[in-house]
Image (cartoon, rainbow over all chains, first blue to last red; front, side, top):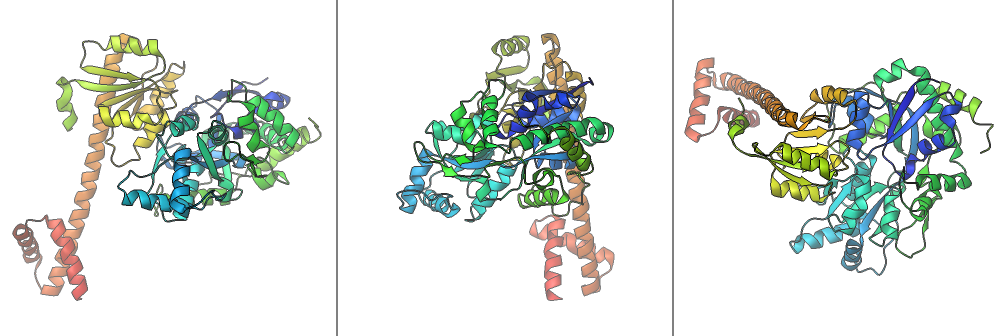
Length: 358
Length: 201
């Protein structure tokens, strides 16, 4: 068997494809020895990938673009050979803010999804009373979460009127319950955890803001992409196999059980399973909302979700521009989302996994 | 060199973020009787922002594996935050590679699993490199600024020469006199003049 391929990730519900591929032995089946390295922070994951301490990583979709432009760290050209998921994030507010929103809007219950204008009334009231600005958190400056929160707040012209800070996913729920922040935009299982612990209320999902846009990607350095084609295609095919396996509801429950283990999320099943099963729990002891597309890993065919394209890249660059992270006059960049290996990846995937009925 | 080098004999406060108690106390011991004063905290989530604000540390030392790393990185995107040297350490075997790569980056330096006797030297080096980097950055910004100022002044001069039939020397002197009379910088006077002359035209 070949040398070990080190793959880093930040444990989240949508890390499911990595965990599933490992548990089902998909990498071994393709003759690949893969080790998964969970990381505590996105910046450290990026640095380790840039410097070669890791061979590949599951990254937030905007991160490989930011790295290729040298934003927020060293400038290292990255490639995305495979998209791993769409959707999966949500915005949760503290119980205190929930009460404030009800009060400022004269409501007895909140609509789901919550329009940002309901928050605008709180912002205006706080400004009148000389109270501090609302503080929201996202997981990383170069994340879909950040742009989704921006887009939602901008629906009510709230840009700049609410403070937005960065907190790593796993620290989010504690920061909400201790009152350090009033709300957050994060991926699973952290929204559900705040709801189960009765610390917050999930008011809308990222699917209500953007439908079926790229969320997590497989990323490698350009150097690795060019030098390790065969390895990368095997790695991608194994992960594509796992994405396809996650089509079935029954399989998704098993994936939730694996994710619950201490080596990954170390959180209870009732926090991890709902979003994978298409359920958004919104408020403690209330009925959940049906969200069939909450975590999307695979479409009607391999190319519909998982194929990297310049359209994905352009969409993300537009969002980065709107967030003023990329100057308007920045020159065009080379292909970060690179489809050159995708066809061979799909062929290997179809030859190896489609006959399996796990 | 830069202003911060004048601090070399003063004490420097360090905020140390490390969840490993024994490693942290070893570092505190190693830096006893040095110019570094350490305040140690464990990874603390959003309250890190408050701590940095209150302590105003001269330097931050953080375990590369700490979840607080992302919070620290995002501080640099806040305009209110003055850049600080950040030293990251890692116990991974391949920290030598990390060291080399991160050196080429911005304000981050990894000291690996250094023995206590080397720690002081590493912090000194990180601080010096950070000051160098900051002064290069400032120099670049001020060169850029000077170039832009010169461009504005030249443009205003040309406009004066054309609209008032002045020669180059007279135009320059007129600009300088306006600057002295109003107590403004020449480039600011040039900017005002350009906008006025363009409106009249």
